[in-house]
Length: 302
Image (cartoon, rainbow, N blue to C red; front, side, top):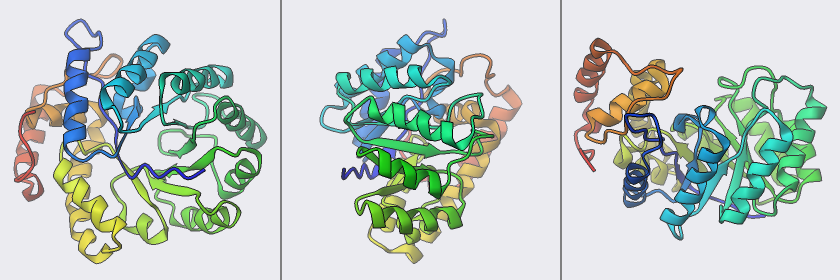
């Protein structure tokens, strides 16, 4: 099942002062992503505070994104602690018009490999649209995704389309691509961060870009160079993107939302239990962002 979403943006979830989802602002945000080169949207990912949303809110965001994005494919994030809950979200996403689904290993639980395989199998077999597995060991400590598990899933699940990887484990990615494409030639690998140069050399064909809301021009050009195989040229851009990533990473979603505000695209504070950056931290981040040469040509405001 060929599915190559390419340059995938991962929108934040904007909240109003009462902490409800601001759908007017969410629409504006999606429009921004589409204007700046998003070839697909993945919603709501962890940067979209998916774990702080109710099931009804997640469904509402998926439905809204599908309708707003039009012909641009939407990848619905369906991860959950319970296999049946995630499968039900997957079925809803397909009925709503999502182009694909994506899921991590189960939240909180750390089942043995056989049950991780069964978890993914039940989610994927609940739908007919492409299914991507997200390998995010930094976020999902405990259960692991390895090449052997992926190969078993290929054997069991016709719509298992590929892996999104944010592990930066190049040995795993090399083994995965070489073995998986022997079994399924159209198996796709996407990098889950903007560190795409090495992943592209291994065979990654796409990128989830959580910082594309901050620096869409930089991230789009980086992706285009990697897809064209111009990896030496892309390396300089990746270094600039990595500098931005290192500024934001320690503060997580709060820093990402603060950076968006600094760039003139305020989308509210994160939901509890996350806290917004305090005034001193935000001022420091603003000073650092304003000194990054890579952001000089990025859009300010909407």
